[in-house]
Length: 176
Image 1: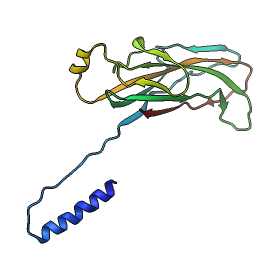
Image 2 (image 1 turned 30 degrees about the vertical axis):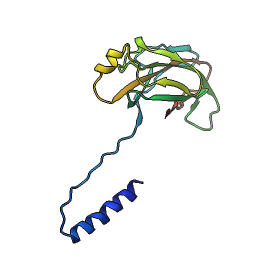
Image 3 (image 1 turned 135 degrees about the horizontal axis):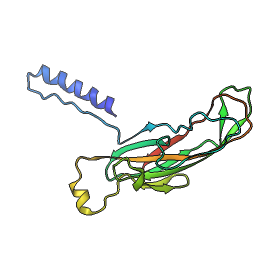
Image 4 (image 1 turned 60 degrees about the horizontal axis):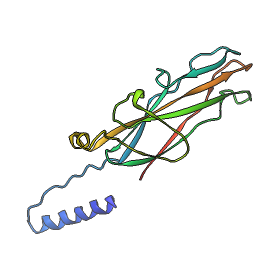
């Protein structure tokens, strides 16, 4: 649609130049309605074989954090896909590390886990930004707001080969 619009403007400018009329340049900046990014990775660090359970609690500096930015009155569906286990980087090693992960969301516009609330399930509908009152909504500046999604959990290290084990967490965001 934008390409067609630009072609139409170009033809209009050519026509205007042939008729010796005045014209105004038009420039548009199109921004996405929604964006997501990784603020920090979930990092269990270096662990020892047979060391048992390792927990990263909500608020731990090693927890993972996503940010989602969009229009302040937007509602979004969040779908997060977790691995069931971390796998060894060497494909010849079939051992893995079971992992259990949780999510919490803070939609006050501040990156603070203390005001977050837990979410569970697929395609959870969340307001991008919650205001404490109508007055706080009216006093907010701009049209963009950011919410934060915290990822934390535990894994259990048993008798496994040494090496690097990893996995990926996918965040899918769709606006309502």
